[in-house]
Length: 272
DNA sequence: AAACCTCCCTGGGGGC
DNA sequence: TGCCCCCAGGGAGGTT
Image (cartoon, rainbow, N blue to C red; front, top):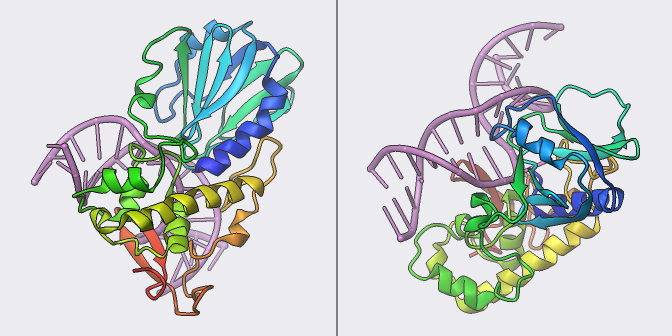
């Protein structure tokens, strides 16, 4: 999936086309996503005005006068703003038609994404948002916080960093990259990383996500922004996906690991 | 509690 | 060329 930088890139790309416009109607071609799309409830959005396009973790929140449309892109989702008359392709599951002949179209081949309707005033806003950790730019996300949350934890620091209850938005690509930048071995127990090193890690997480957002995110296969363009952070990846290559810092051959059914790349010399 | 494991899906790539 | 297996950016839900 799109990780945080890809979702944020999408948000920035689509927001100018949506904010201030009214929703003509929603079209659901395939309701079988990660959760069933609430087709009937979504009709409440017809005629509503879009007031803001926000992001929380990897969720996009389209705030309207009638309620909020919440979208998740899963592993393979992408959004584009196009003319409503453009014929849909396979895997174009959802359209949000606007009052100006344009529409926001969701494409998601693997269907791990989701579309939700949150009626205005509902509290808590949505169960899926209830137990999320801080955003990486939240003032509470720092070395002291990570060190405290990791105390006594024996799971790997990589799994810990990818836990959305600890911090949101860090998926497999950026977990690999941040741990490399901070010089921390991905299999090290989370509880055995010093506070100083967590301080470094928090800083690198933020810096890497910021840089990735600057260049439009990482496109591995099918991610595109709101205009259909790929992201260019892939060029700057130091370790992710670099099977058979050497460490960009010390030239030691990179190694791979399998952790929690996900691939990890790391430098055995730089990361301890 | 915390730490694993499985599963939801389609499609691309490599090996044979 | 085709088939088959493995792998992929997520993450909820279930089991130990």
